[in-house]
Amino acid sequence: MNLSEHFTLTELVKSQTADRLGINNTPSRDAVECLIVVCEKILEPVRDNYGVPITPSSGFRCPELNEAIGSSNTSQHISGEAVDFEVPGIPNMGLAHWIMNNLDYDQMLLEFYRDNDPNSGWVHCSYCGDDNRNDAKRFDGKVWLPLGED
Image (tube, rainbow, N blue to C red):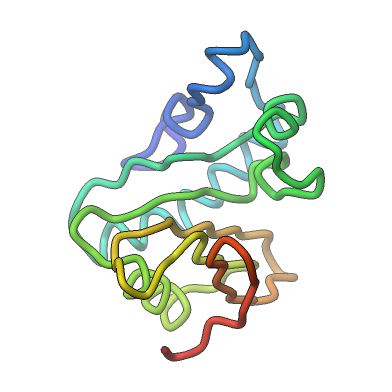
């Protein structure tokens, strides 16, 4: 099932952990609708800007999968409102700043980024509609910090 021009439901529910543990990571209809919006509002604009294919590393996670990987039980991945990804050839800090400056989002988290390695970590971005907070932070593995114009 296509969620948007360049993204499928299969790639946004794919999980090696779910496969390994035998977890059924099938989203509800509401979660699929949220994934469609995330594709339209976040992934497609990023792909259009950089002009290269993007493979999300994490999209929807059912509660069992979310718990299995040790994520928060309030994660927006559970509702289909969030996606983790990188853009090949683009430093993650640059990607984070482009999102901050060009898109409406709820949370944009630069996770496990290290200043001395521009390709470290990944970007987590969520979209929830009219109540988006445009909250940007970075996490180095120990501390959450506001993500400013670094």
